[in-house]
Length: 394
Image (cartoon, rainbow, N blue to C red; front, side):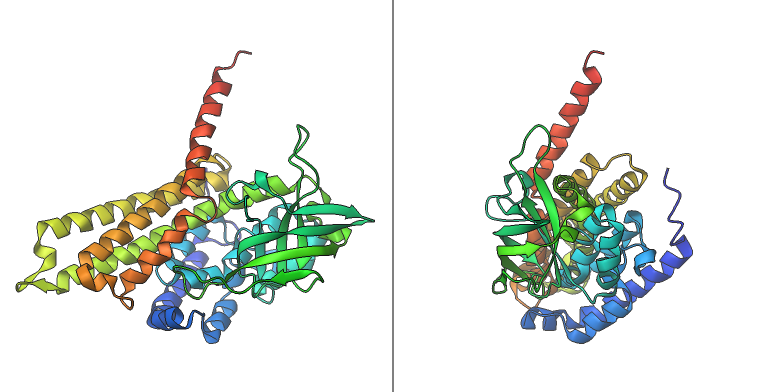
């Protein structure tokens, strides 16, 4: 049973969430076009986000973060999803897939070295897992880590790495040995971005989410010491990746709900004000049907994201529910955004109309942190394995 976060009581969290919502609505939303047109988050918004503790809201308080748990994280994600998704991307890896590797698997020394800077925003952490041939499934990893004295030599290439161009720390997944019955052979390393041999490519040109930065990263004979091996364990990498991604998928579900809510709100406002033949288009039953489908999806997605977060925090389900939430909510956000463009008609196809940006922004959500297809495999495979285990003799 979820009994709340003792480090951040409900009344304190309500104040935190109110400040985030105010920041989103009054500071960020008025500058969405600026973010889109300049393909950058304005420096003053980054500074304010850091001052509010947004770079470390999910980092434990002992390391300078706000200490929000995943139930609270989902509420924050829904608030942040209401505006340009690139804002959240700016500090998403610090709180999520990169930062949580350190929180969950780092040694005390590693946590003390990196987490305070990550929480404050002084250090941007990048999660360097994806590479050609190894995206949603880390088992295909080809980046290598070979022993060198008491340290390691890393060689390989990563792609689509969020915040790579601003990173101070790369959380790098590499293969130390072939997979076997005794382990996956995947380790994770903490690699400072200024280490010799690291080359960061040009910022990727993407379909949407202008203002967020992804790029290729190449590791050529990059030497790291023994202190770089997360947890001091060469086999912890696969578990760290899967655990961090599962948590991140619930956050992604909440983010998708926030974006879908914005698409719905834009649709309702347009339907109530735009006219066709002197009649508000919202009076037409077919438009109302589209709004009804949007609203139903948003309500279902919000409930599912919240329930998945609760199950994760209590430890009841940290595998199937995260994938189900990510699958449903991101697919729902895509459908809701598509309907929003349809409600707007031709104006919904215009570049400076909010629903056009949302339509492009949410398309990525079905791809990163595990594609929809991977989520279906996790859900279906997990159910079958559980059934076999329950029915097995003995």
